[in-house]
Amino acid sequence: MPIAVVREVSPSIAQCELTHVDRQPIDFDRATAQHDEYVRALESLGYRAIRLPALVGHPDAVFVEDCAVVVDEVAVITRPGAASRMGEVASIADALRPHRNLAFIEAPATLDGGDVLRAGRLVRIGRTARTNDEGIAQLRTILEPFGYDVGPAELTGCLHLKTAVTSVAPGILLVNRAWVDPSQFPGFDFVDVDPSEPFAANALLVGDALVLSSAFPRTRARLEARGIHVTTVDATELAKAEGGVTCCSLLFD
Ligand code: GLY
Image: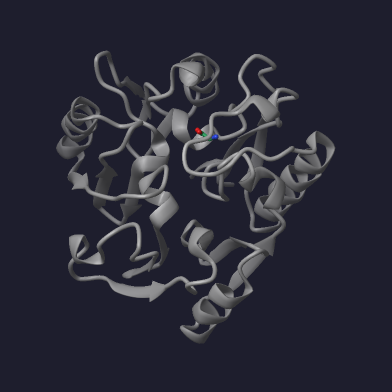
């Protein structure tokens, strides 16, 4: 059975890092309930959830995606670009060790998993405030021997590459062109987010299904018009912490 590594919401989530969104009050109970709904959605799609306990001193630790890049051959433990997040990775390494050989991004590199877009053997890495050139180079050195086509991607105006573009079906990317130029992904077809829903580009492909926040009904309609089956979850409280649906899990077989 495929696995979803998730982590309970930290009681300190209100002190999360914010880069491109304004700080608003975050209701911890509501965030926790939404996270539970998200994990149940993954379970209903056939995944076994490994639920890690909250890290009280790490407000952003629910966003486990940033701490590792997991492919069939290896789990790469990242070095997150926000100093407040670097202490999240040790427990992620412990959780992944039984399932994969581990590789590590080392200083001076920084790399957030949210900047790593994978579509088949293609891996594109956002060059951002969180992920530097050395991080891109180290991930390329680790993944290229396994046959991945690894390279950088440029974006602007949002936190991570996967805030701006995600893989939603074989050969199809969901994109917000205001934040990323799709010409960087030749050979793909695109679904554009509805202009009123800029954060909708963060969707989570789970097998043949796609998990999307229920806050984005217009983009959902665009995806369904392309024949993509969409499962929605309420992720509005975690969105106030600048996190989306990809951020809250590490999925692997
Ligand atoms: N609040 C999510 C992050 O900045 O990593």
